[in-house]
Length: 278
Image 1 (tube, rainbow, N blue to C red):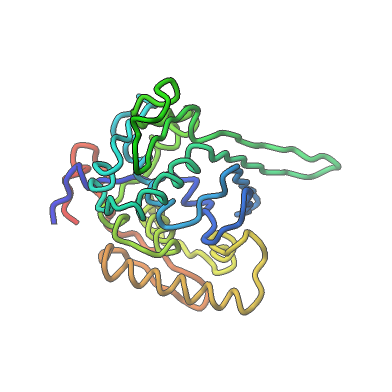
Image 2: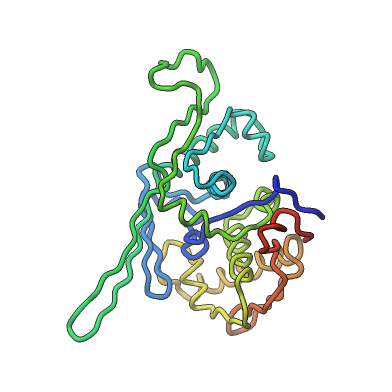
């Protein structure tokens, strides 16, 4: 299958390293991986569904295509939903609007603490995804909305910090991303694509690290939860290898998931990216 520019998609590295929750956790969420803590804040609620993840990917892909411009135009409701294979009926409009609003308000803070000799050093990064947005996605009489509040243009002006992550995002097949229904499989899909994209030597990711990276609620898991998550990770991995990335050289062992140097899902040469055979 020839992959065209239209199907080339991107997702940011911080969402690969610090995946979002997969259930409704409210307005805050924390996850710690390898000594670095990531805190998500969102007044409208932390994104957690597959729909939320798809819209973050769509915004990231649009931003990557038109970088360094930070403003992305989202277009009309029905047109944009059709473009990404989503029905334009009302039961799809509300989740899309909520996902975009949550994305626009999402704030991220990372902290790493180093201790020794009676001293503690803190290193962190704080940024929001968007600095300005306008979203008029609804059914009904949009002409009745006060014109000084909305001019019927849907857009999001992204922060420069977020645009920095966009520039370093590994490419994947956007059709895959729109096809996958499970939030865990979406997280695993891009995690695998990103890890193998720059892998030079065999690497084993132990289950304990994977529990921290993909576990629910950012807390330590009990034995039952670890077993359940391990089954879920294996199921997601099998789906990815079977349907989306059969050339990936990966195996699950008692110790963890072993990654071996593999052909990248998308050719890394910029001249070939978007036209690679996969």
